[in-house]
Image 1 (cartoon, rainbow, N blue to C red):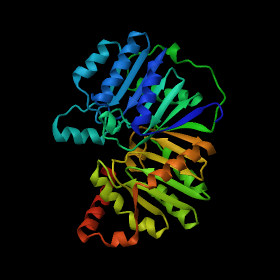
Image 2 (cartoon, rainbow, N blue to C red):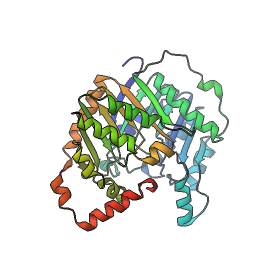
Image 3 (tube, rainbow, N blue to C red):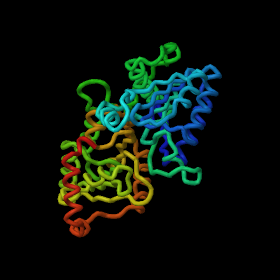
Image 4 (spheres, one colour):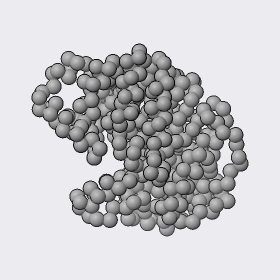
Length: 367
């Protein structure tokens, strides 16, 4: 598609091998940004490759979120001794529940990005942990979606990483390694993100514009769905004007309170004509959308206030019908593992469940 090549990756069984293959081929620079990093089987495999590349003279930069990640001091020390440059983004300094709460309230780095030589980039929903690895490989097989991008959009992803690295006072960069030939802009593949500006709305604006322009169908898969008013209105208005709006939301989740809050929206969505499905089985963690089979996004941003107004996020926006077809095919496959939400199912919920959903929805901004 234009000057970029984009591959859609499903789950860890496709994503992690593609990442490791690209990392092993790095010649000059590696930049990795993640919310969650664990020193489990996935984290150990990553560390081995990063250490090998650092010994080979590659400038290796690793940034993980201080609240989301769970790596030991020994893991980080091993990396640093090998020459891997590590930044802990906004570390949690106070111990105990209070410290965790205060750390949660700070802006978190929720991005998932990996850039190799400014040439190949990965982004999407997968963190670097065994939660996302295939069950056959000892993981938990969480359902998620990522993309591999080769071309100018990888440079966009790298620039976003470098801004954060510099602002957060990461080790000094060998700047010449990050100078790339100028290429014509390609609007068909764009990297958008929530930056450090006060007005961090790029991802929200992109979603709303796509929903407002939709003519035939909107397919959204989102793991933590508590959208701001403009996003919610965009979806419901599209349904009212005859657009087929279908949502796959998490029926299996690692944050039950968010699921309760999301269910508080179901009646309103159904009244507007939106079709709602809950994913069953493995934990759903994907954040994707495809509109009219031509506009697609895959990224780290949930449709909630934390992602769209507070945290650092990154999404790839791809305007290409072939990629859109692949996205719609994946969405249709996922529907087979979902349960349809109907008015009858909502009426069967107990008064206690409805009360819990109402209460959870009232505190949605804190979840």
